[in-house]
Image (cartoon, rainbow, N blue to C red):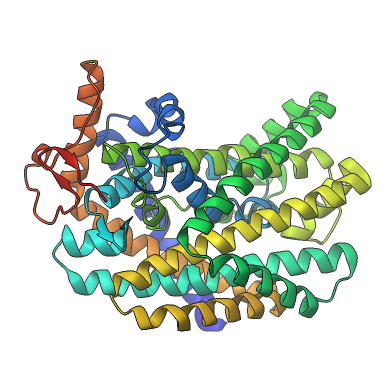
Length: 462
């Protein structure tokens, strides 16, 4: 733990925040602020039916959103507020807007350099590192990293949140919770990618809408306190002493750290889901997956923050993480709040377990070693069980470390591949400006080396 904490301090204090902000601003300007101006288009593209040849845009959105809308939206936000103060939420918002450009680029690249395997499209950072950068060894290294991070460590965090929450609320022993959760996970993941897509398509929209409705109710119930809550967020974000928060660096770091864990922009995770969709233009999945960044941070995470801040429990309890969110919800809604939040915790975190597993299995497929799939499933289930019974600080610290490694690795790759990404995105924007339906062909790129699933007529057929 000493080694992990030291590495986390170095990476998060001196390296990663600067890399995220600088690269995010670079692509924001290069893409002419498309990450902000194209929000309406994001909704339009997400609701397209698709052509039935692969995972639909909406299903791909739900898989990635299911991975993001988990403990980061409930426990992570509470942890950021309890450690950094209300101002950490402001920096979480800033990260989402700036890093949205990274999401546009990484998911567009995933579509450009996707491949056909066993009747489905697959792709992600490992694929664009190999096909776009011609660096197979980087692709293999990243596939191993994301498999460990998502398939094992992040799933341990999600599972830990579920069992800790149930123990805190109902006194259910974490060991028994671990058994139940492991069995449920096995039932879903052994069904394959299409079952994952179907389950995510059902769970994610329902749980997200209901959670937002409850949050809006709490805001309206305490509407007179809204100016004070917003003031505390803005004041604490720049003047920590005025709101009793920690050092400014801690506030910024906590907001960005928990924001990244929640929305995953630039980490190289969502491109694995984005590449699976069938579409007529790669940028469409860039738009769809970036909408997931905004929904997760600006909607779900903000909802949790407002529930905690409106409740007034911050500073009156020693609870941190998921227990703080539980305390706030019970304060506002009583027994209904307890039951409702437990349902949300289970569905949010469980959908993340499913989405994380999908990312791992896609990258196992990349290694072309099919014999690894069954051992991966066994270890993934074992990590769900282990995380369910482990103490929270250790699993969160491990998650922070591997999250930093992934982000640095992936941002390096998308920066090197900025030319094809920018050419593709500009093509979409220019075609739509000319009131033409944007259809991508490999001829759009000045260099189409490594492009396999697009020819001079568009996307190839499955």
